[in-house]
Length: 91
Image (cartoon, rainbow, N blue to C red; front, top):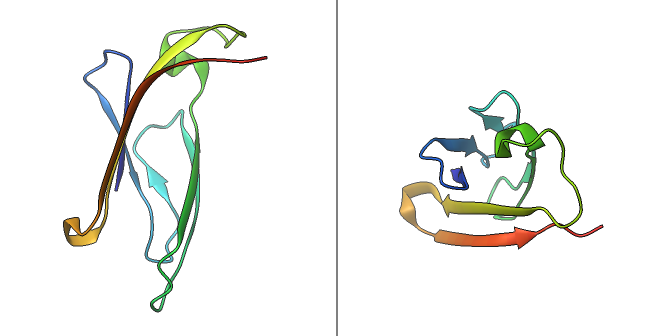
């Protein structure tokens, strides 16, 4: 399970990935793709597109600053990962 929080929002975007299944996201504006392993192959590669409107912007521009927090929690809480930061968009 991946969880994203944008800026100071309290609303989270939840993404289910892994187990060889198609990824699903509970935010209709977001798009996610995932490649996961099965049968003891534990790789998991995921990417998500977050449109500008989720950041309260009409469109992104170089120099925009966005705040994003993400957390990954593996099955049975066997692995946890958390990342948070403020990012300046490049050209």
